[in-house]
Length: 183
Image (cartoon, rainbow, N blue to C red; front, side, top):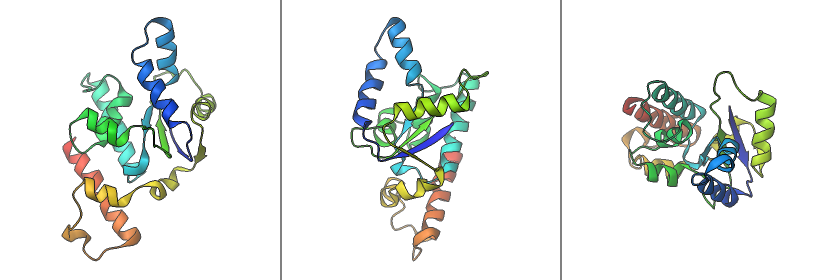
C-alpha cells in the first residue's frame, strides 16, 4: 500500500519515533516497530509511481531471495531509491527528516495481511499529521531541479531545449532506467 501526504506537520516527531524504536527492547520495542512498519519516503526526489514500484519490486525480490542489504524490506526500498550504494546517504536523501513537508508511506504486507486495506489506511492516517492526497499529485511535490542535479542530468544533451511535462517525462525515464539497470 502506498499513500502520499502533503502539509505534514509531525515529521520531526516521526523521525524521533523511528530512531527510538530501533533501539527499544522487549514488547515495547516490538509494538512500536510494528506501528512504524513502513517505508517513510520524502517524495521531493521521487519522479514517479513507476520509480516507487520499481524500488518496491526490487526490495521484495531481494527479500524473497534472502538478499536484503538493509535490515528490513522497508529500509531496502529507501536504499534502492538512492542512485548510489550508501544507506546513510539514501536515508538522508529519501527518508523522513525534520523538514519533510510531504511524505510517502509504503507498507509491504505479509501474507496473509494482518490488517485490511481500510484498517491500514486508518493506521497510516493516524500516524501522519498531514493531508492524504492522490498519488497522481506526486509530480507536484517533486523537486525536479534537485533530481536533475542528483542524477547529474544538468547539461545532458537529451534534455537540451526540453521544458515542462516533456522534460519531466524524460528525466523520469532516465531515473527509472538507471535504477532498473543497476538492479
